[in-house]
Length: 439
Image (cartoon, rainbow, N blue to C red):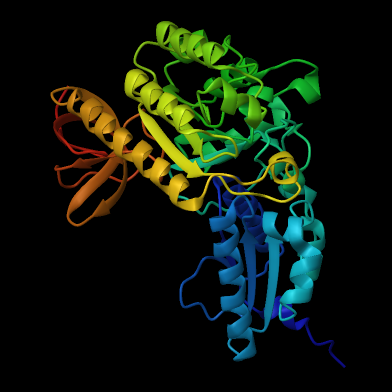
């Protein structure tokens, strides 16, 4: 008598990814493991006929948690209607609130944290294949990918729950990351974005010293890797030795993402950022002096407990004076179990938080338009990401995918994933317009 195969081994598995690029990498690893086990796994397939759904959640701030919970409830409802057989939840929200969520949403068949992939795979009828370490099934465009160089965070920021969900900082070895970069290049990737909760800390746990510069040099030697981009470099303890490397290595983009969060000494101290206004300004001056033309991206947080109108005006004045190329802003979210959540009252009302958010973004929009206009008449190496409405949409080295400016290229017939010299002919607040020129 033949043994019947496990029912879930026959079912299609649809992975839904919410949150940041670090979650994207986790989903890509999960996808590769499932496919390596010869399971039919897909990523965010709309109107899917998948019998099994895995939701990779975000738990960072209120809006992200709300999106994750709404997505879970949506698929729980589909399960109750018989359209889905199994619903599993993984990621940051599940790591942080597993017990509460288990009680509140019993329709979910299993809850898994950020470090529970082997258990999740076993539940899905798969083995955790160590021979697939470093391999991923890409969910981004085929010409770019994220490279997660570390997991977790050791920083004590008052507002952040990441250490609760991701644990302590854990660097991945240079050798492993170089092998993964080569694997990605072999899949057609030309651009990688280095990500971690904190690039600045890279190597301290593994090698006893900061080794981001060594990692950059090894990655820059990988044949076929045309652009390397740095995200999420903490300003306190910033490894300034990487600046000459960025300037000298042609395939390291003149681009740096440094989440500053604020500029007021009072607020930085309350946030426990380990840096003050003057040291922040000194770092910006040094970066711009050593790497002229480098695009700086940052994130600001408004409405932190104790932030006054004077603090907010200091922030606006800083943004107005220093004209950072890219800037995003969040409103403070009062998170339980964080330093601020346990010790501060959330004193800034929601309307004030939103007003401060809007004032920052309105100012940054003006700055972005001003900086974009300065690029008109100049030629930039541009990678084409996609075709849209009859145009080719690309990016310069100063722009990361999904979060930064784009170039609308009014030249037909360009190939996605290829580089072209593009003359900028016009500028919008957040985008550029151009055409390919011969060089």
